Image 1 (spheres, rainbow over the protein chains, first blue to last red):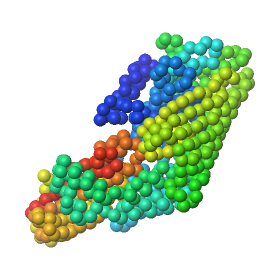
Image 2 (cartoon, rainbow over the protein chains, first blue to last red; image 1 turned 45 degrees about the vertical axis):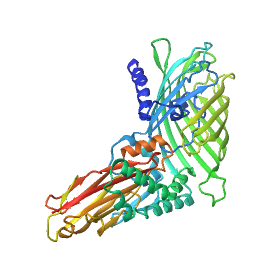
Image 3 (spheres, chains in turn red, brown; image 1 turned 180 degrees about the vertical axis):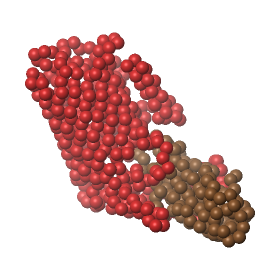
Image 4 (tube, chains in turn yellow, purple; image 1 turned 120 degrees about the vertical axis):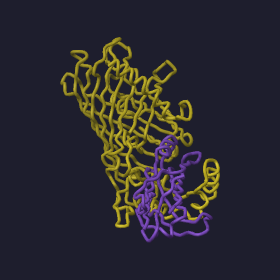
Length: 378
Length: 132
């Protein structure tokens, strides 16, 4: 375990540096954590998470209101190995989730949505936090290391969205570089080439690529995700024990609220259903104190998203297989507001699992998401 | 600078371009003279992969002494995260294949891969003199 901790402590700073090789890591390079490890220990702003666009590397940092140190207590790192594997068959269609067939000419033709395209972007994560995970009378915090995996099984978009996206991609690809551009650019090197191509791009803005980027922010009509995580607690100075392990699944539907000709859609009614099986090494039994237990969570979330603002409610019922432990609930309201491009505030407030004094009060800030809409849980 | 020997006679020289990126890509290849005044052959990618499928250009005699120029324009605007665009700009590759000359099949790498300042666009260029 010591080796694992040393590795993680070494790996996270290295990853922070690798994320921005142009200089030291900055706050804008971090995002509020949403790794499976944080979800497993009920630390994420939401336990029922919305799917996101696959990313190469996501670094997380979280400040909780109940912490008094002034520094964030929680860190996470999540990456999709497929991004880093050397592969000779990458193309935009695979990223965009468009299924293709090869014509006799060798050209690719879009034939439909690849609803399983998210599978290859399955992610691995590690996270670290300090939190009181033992529901006893003591209020001491434990160090918590966790590892998780997350994958999107199905992602299905509206036919209208698919038609718009495939047409835009087809239109973009049917405008190859002009002969004049090739003659002007090839043979130039270094700054001379950079100046020439920058001038060309300024004079010929790529509106179609911007349209495709906008369409990529649209959410799927149906999405199905599976995630799992394992968390170990530092109990005492040198003892590490299995804390929790779990697997969970979420089915989500994003119902567009914009007029049908609005593209891309920015307003949604989100309906998510979630189930989770979890082993808890430190559940609280009224009769026997801390006991090992297995439990099943079933819940859902409903939320409205209106451009910069989203608000929702999350409810989860937790059933323990030990009769001596009563069922528990989590009732949390979650809000998200986009301050400006790339800067978001997420908050979650309400009643968490555990005793009646267990209150959720999380406040996270997301930076650097570009024009992507930050929704609850992202 | 890389060169390719096309030989002589009526042997057809074939060309292919293989772009490897998650970004949107489109390419054009052409053969011109040293003065870049006449176009002897040109072909383009026909999908967003930027690939040009292996295709005969023309015969060796016509190509001798000419320049093969290839340019690929890549849009990374579909990645909303700037760090992701930078990573993809550094990771993307292109390979060029020529076949039919005395040296058989040869593989070439790009001369220049140049992104713009915010990494939303990348240009990839290659120039190959075709010798006898």
